[in-house]
Length: 257
Length: 225
Image (cartoon, rainbow over all chains, first blue to last red; front, top):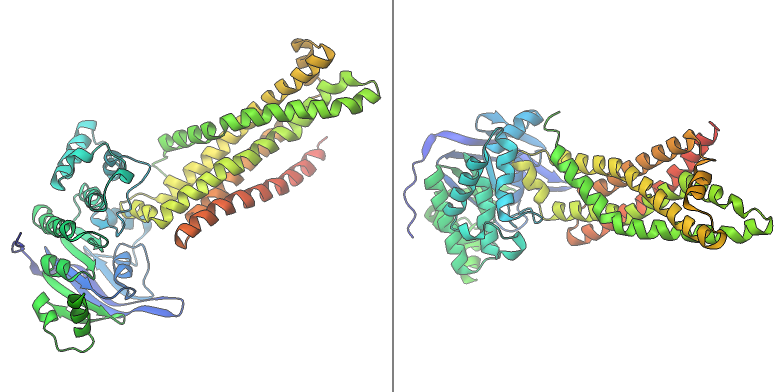
């Protein structure tokens, strides 16, 4: 399915990252990066394993703190707000984990209800049921409602993980390796789901991946992260056709694979 | 600060209680029975078998019931908490909770620590009575003592301080088991290996601390006698 043209407001960044650096002990993962995510945009962050792609979205969601630099999300400086403000901000950000991170002691229904019940005070049983049904329907897994996460396939788990974040109607989606470990057909389905979420929920998204098909199918812009810095940011074709010797091998190698 | 997670605390109390109930029942009964059986010959030498109920009650209520309960709970509950939270940590479930606007420390750690702190004293009291039942069966078999006489002799030597010290001990043990299990699990890392280490660390550390606390509390309570 062809990606529909997104309505991107290039004057309105929902995430602004300036001079962010992060090191783990002596290993510098990110070295003073700058990045903007615009309203309605799908931005794909490409890069080899261990280049700090997942660290980047963990910094955005406040799971990690940068050593230096500023991260502004929906107008709030993540590094300076208190716990309560951060908690309120996180509700506006959906985070889809690489391994889905479904609560394995809960059914699919309970997984989906959990963020809703805890963040929407006074919500009625009927409203919860309706929200759960709607979000399950939007990821095409209505029948899985009473199953346990262990009974689901990798692709189904990804979908439920995405559904769990969508139930709070986030303004920003952060996808960590959404197609990792999935078969090609399921990858296509997940790519389509990411595009569908962008259209249906009007989200702005950062998609972390090293899957070029996923990058091509879902990204409005691609940011190439190498050696702790963005070496190239642009459309897929701009990045793909670059002569940059540091970037080119990544594409050549992936297509040979 | 709200939310107070009452539902989760009740659920965890139920989990802790149910998880240990069968084992504690069996172990408590055996401890009471064996302790009485082993003490009998010594008292028989002095012709003092009538003191057996008093001896059993003091030993069980002051020391054995809280200690046996704590050791079983360390193995059963502590390891389970360590493994559960460790597994949640390595599969990013704790991160998922955090990014969805829930404070995982409050929801996972506080509730479990409170649950063990509340439930272990209840279980220890239960263990005490089950152990006394085991003791009674042995005494009744050998001496033909009636249940009411046995119970009268059991409660006669016990003082208020014995119950208080025992209760305080169980509360401290419960808190320790909960906090150690949660700490080991919540801060575990290194993937699946970390889960095993968390479970193991929870048991070993909790058991060690329980013995240290036992010594300290016995020392303190003996000053009040």
